[in-house]
Length: 298
Length: 315
Image 1 (cartoon, rainbow over the protein chains, first blue to last red):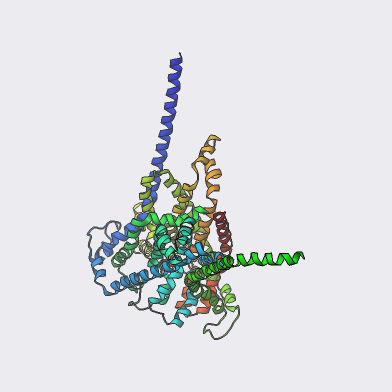
Image 2 (cartoon, rainbow over the protein chains, first blue to last red):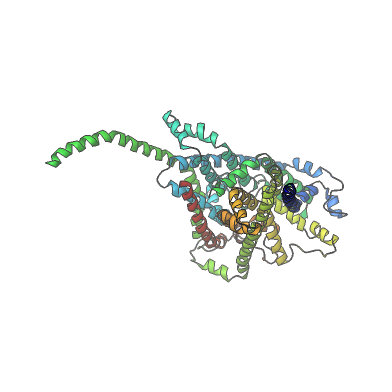
């Protein structure tokens, strides 16, 4: 008697666990399916970009069969771009501008964040908030007055103006990330350093920068992304192809009047998107952590 | 008499305390001087290339086209009377609000789906979903343009396969508006997803357990546990996205450059057309200044959120 009731209860428990398990499994499959649909939708443009870049002009204009598949893949577009002096120029200019922007932005941001997070002076708290608020004055509001300002400095149609202007897009957020990381370093660490006779700069370079490396990587990626992909400033200030960067060069040089050489344009897109994609593929975790760290604290 | 005895005592005490206090003061002073100099590059950068141009824009907007004469507010009045500009205001608001609503909704759904997936697979899915956000926007918009292309439209090919008629994607006003919003949603959703995912992960598991014990279903858990816990991050993400979307330039410029019949122009692209292409910088400046009231409205809320956050950190 007691044995049977025990058995029944156990059975019921097993059943319930089973159905719960099954329910969870179904939820998991459902999630995978839905995510799969979203991934396909999200990856349609990059996929089409890659397919078109492998097509010859003849295949594109023939319009036979599915446009989504490449029938006679060719690397001619890539070869054309790699040997095209203007495109080499855009790439080189973009690399120079990006490296300089990242270096300038990170120097400014790290010094300021260290100062605001650890040392402080009269009004530094207000300054931290104020820096954050510069995001409320977007580039699309500033590019016209800056046109005059850049004209005064004499940098219209020179990519050096981008080295001056891009940091304004990157520095506020980089500073914000770095303040977050620096404030999370325990105060005992810098007290110990001060007692040992370290100066502030020594403290910054020997302790803060090594400890806050994940934050520095995140901020660097942000500065890189901003300066690699910015479009408005170069479009407004650069006219000749010797000074153009990739985004503007592709849009204005490869589209001549009514002639759209889509194969070449898409191949250029692929080449220009490669560095950001590679960087994100390896360092995405740092970036996501840096981006969300500030937000989840609040 | 009491004074007479107390004075030397005070003098001795102050004499003994003076040296450490003054060196402490000097230390603090030196410290804040160094701190100020470390911030100086930042202050200079922001002052020269953000604050000064912002005020200069206000000044510019009150000049005539040749920038020789002060004309007061007549640029603003001129713009407000123009039909094109009324379209710009409407489209900017439509573009920003619709895009942000869809980005927030889809991002929320994606974050939830992602939260169900076990940790190791999550990285791969997240990586795939982040691709739209990683490709520079100007370049991916170019790809969208190619997909919308009237003569070789790859999207129309799919539609025709299923027996529908082809759509003139960028040729008709409202469809073109829909296209610009689609591209923006495609680009911006991954950002919402990762922000929400981080927020979901920060909700303590015990709260869900407690809710389950109290008999809450999934819907109740969503509305009474998840959403209240995420409220802050949702607000900040939405406000930031609103600012960025409102000021967006790349998508409309490349996809339609304002056409058909100026129906897709937003503030930024219209300012570019008027200010750079037609060479009327003052009119363009006054156009872009119309963004400011809306941004200031957002600023108020962001500022409130930020100060609350820094108070929490201090506490």
